Image 1 (cartoon, rainbow, N blue to C red):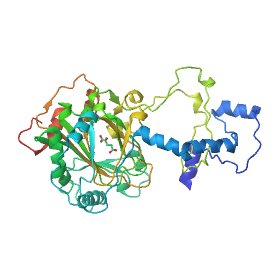
Image 2 (image 1 turned 180 degrees about the horizontal axis):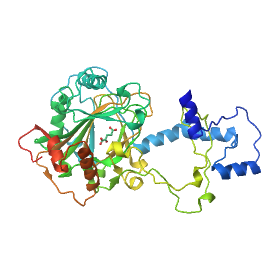
Image 3 (image 1 turned 90 degrees about the vertical axis):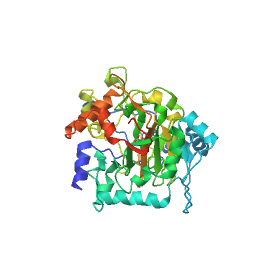
Image 4 (image 1 turned 120 degrees about the horizontal axis):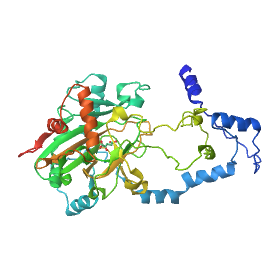
Length: 422
Ligand SMILES: O=C(O)CCC(=O)C(=O)O
């Protein structure tokens, strides 16, 4: 309770409760001098019951109940609903892609294959993740990445571990990287000479934010792009609510875009600021639990502050800077997937993932594969230099002094080798 009261005091929580009767709603509201003074002093003012219930209900029915709107939404965003089989099927070791699937991959930059990984394996990955978290299995060389904003409230480590990476030497997780069916598909996309260049299990606990749109190629100092492919397999059911992946079909054929920490702020390019005001009306009951607004009274009199990603020093992942132009919402295709379903995508494809607003974990396992025919490139002065510098500096802070290329050479492991330049 103490924490709650401090929270309320610190952020000046606004509790807005709608009246449950239809009142008379006048068309003018004369503000008192006291209200005007309060607004000038604190920068905000709450008016109770300003908008009538009839209007609020209209807004609700447009957004929630109108089936047509919902169907248009599905059509617009091209939702892919993939339902897992609830039986243990036979899992063959080879998957011959049809010409149609190969063409789809070339055209769109991604391809989903249902039920590629068996339930026994998925359970072993889920169990291994939990055991490493609770200390009953050795961590070995696995790197654990926590979600900073979940650490304080987490009841167990699993509630705040977002990711385990460098899993290639773990005896359980490595079975994914070397799964014959998976490698058979990869070899049809990039050829037979295959190296695993980066591996991870992503847990995405409830409360984890979005992964901004990005291109995996941005991280890789080798080419050609079409010889690098990512596999991303659902361990749990993956839904829009728990943070599914989305892709921008065809974007792998575009440029490698400028990335950075996205500035989720909408500056107005006009002034004076005291002549710009926002209105924000509760349609539903607004509570602390469902995400009420908070304000810092008086902060409107301070400077316009620098904005960015609060977790920037922990995350080491960037998003595309020109997000609205490069990855507009209407072009994003959500990949709703069942356990074992696997998406393969080309390294230049723009993709990201939704925030997890559900109450369940969203575990997936993923590997980036590159053909051993790839070659290293010099990224000095290119859009890639920013992340390379940041990662090299982060390693140096932990006592590991390597160039970006050396770092990648350490990570790469041949899994279907004849020879590899990586
Ligand atoms: O699984 C996710 O949430 C997104 C992962 C991703 O896009 C990545 O690591 O490149």
